[in-house]
Image 1 (cartoon, rainbow, N blue to C red):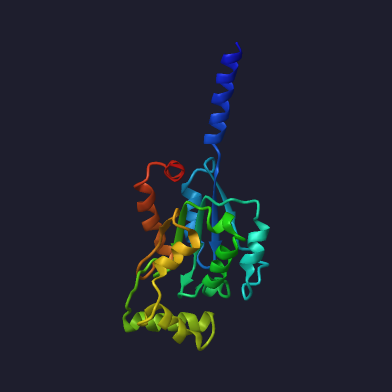
Image 2: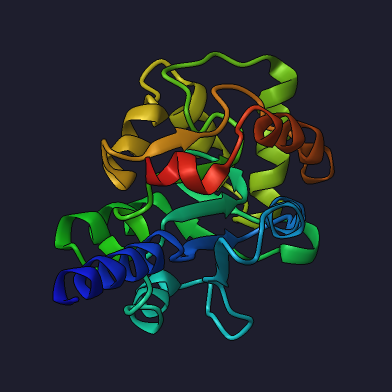
Length: 222
């Protein structure tokens, strides 16, 4: 009778562990189309969604410091960052104008291990910004002009020249390696090695992505 009880309890507890919801964290600096698509197409029995940004955040400062503290008990299994990317910063435009997070601040938190539950724990990271995973890229004149316009409007006049050089110049960084430093070698990074896709057009790509995976939760856990 005792051994039967042990077997039953083992089955029950193993089921509880297996049924744990995964924490899907989002850092919405620009379009919310991406995270809304996942919310509408992933089971609420398998994923718990948490938005890391807040309307009260002061995005001109290192707001991530407060966000990490605010969610210190949260362990992200998946992380999604929605924002334009200009090498030194992810940022929003139009309705999300002023929202930003600097890669320098992310790297600082990796060094002092103050936000590992958000930055280093995820096994899957979505980076919805152009060139986030580029090794080294050149750009057309039009692409440079588009970057200059976006950065000048959202980050401030004069910044676009420095950021354009950081992305496209002869000494420009390989952002793929930078992202690996931020999120760790065990995370699977999904993003763009070239120009990104506008938020309203990501639905098509995300639909294709999910159609190729039988069960996202199982694929992350395994």
